[in-house]
Image 1 (cartoon, one colour):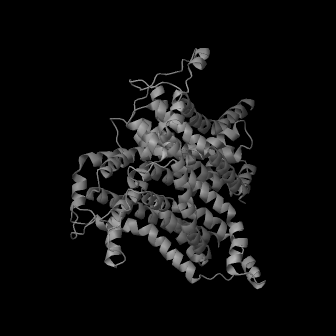
Image 2 (cartoon, chains in turn orange, brown):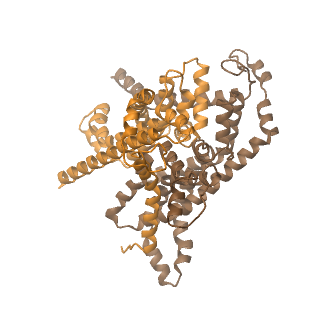
Image 3 (cartoon, rainbow over the protein chains, first blue to last red):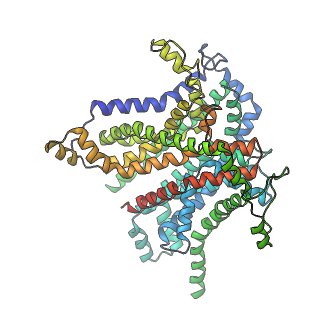
Length: 267
Length: 301
């Protein structure tokens, strides 16, 4: 097929990607600004990174955020994978429509509603707000995203492999762990990473469910941003952006290599 | 043997049951509680509302129901204006997102096949970095002495500093920027599958490129247009962070109203009533979206 990029196509791609990346790039550049005035360039300096690491409250919030993200993403991955299996392998079970609805609704529901409703629930059952309430809230939100990611892999899955294993006498559970799970593993990893990022990133739901004991990094950043631009926030953002970029590059390289290996095996 | 298949059945039943129960307890029940509390009176206490629910007293429950909060929502035209302006801002943003996203998705779909997965990755990458940080980045750009003003004055396009931050324009910029991947990806997914020979045939038969765009490309891309628009419109209506950080005190949006009823005025019943109002506003788009999405997932080979 003869597809050619016209000048219009190239221009829109260049402008589009410039729009997507310039703000992030500027933020990273200005995190090395010596001036306290965030938008006036005062020479190169890494002083804000030093200030950031000496900021005890911010570091503590980062640690809490990381723990919540790891824990909630792990639970969400298990629950989301189970939900995806239920939706693809169990045909029409009673309550399926309600189930599908509950999986899709949290993804599009405004965060303020999800946050408020979970908070009122935790107050009703008399659970102290803090680490655990945020973890439960994040698990509930992110498991839906995991479900969708894993479900789309299960849809394109070649069932004959499982049938072959069962024909050769493998019990269902063994078939699942030796055939199904390895094949859907990349989508499970992708779902986990998505859940982890969403949890790290969430401000609204965490704000409703945070207590005096636990403040997350987005809540801290938000309260600082409301007081005005802060070079320390720039430095923290640049570090987060750096971590994400490295993570995505690593994930791409790993998946490329495994794709290469499997194509070699096929030949 | 019978016993073994019984345990197997039980184990298999757990697969749907565990996530189902989790969602019932942590999604459905909380939701019913919001509905309940929106019908109760505020109180200066902890928690700041009087419960209308006594599990043993169903008749009493119905007699105590109280639509006062919703009455307040109707009486005070602040909420009505907030609803209107949320819907307007979300609709305009969605339109802008279509205008910005379509050329990008179209360019991606026409790029050589070996580059396409890289382009998709580049669209997704900003989504992995914090939403809050990406909005924060725009404050430095849009503020009166900010980077946009400096750049435009530097090349001599303007002589007065631009004052965009804390206006509705800044909210549009923020929403378009933050939601662009949600618009581009569904559009790209449909445009990529499009058969180019249809366009060639139309050209051969004497159609102008503009006309073939409207009669062939747009109808074929419709599933992507609908999915992308809903995916942007629904969360935009309830958006809080963007209007709060970029919109200033002038920008009225319902998600922000809920936040301030809750955190500033500590009126939980009223906040719940606002939540129900916001949800009623979104029921139809959410149901349509769910159908579109379920059909899309199930239609895949």
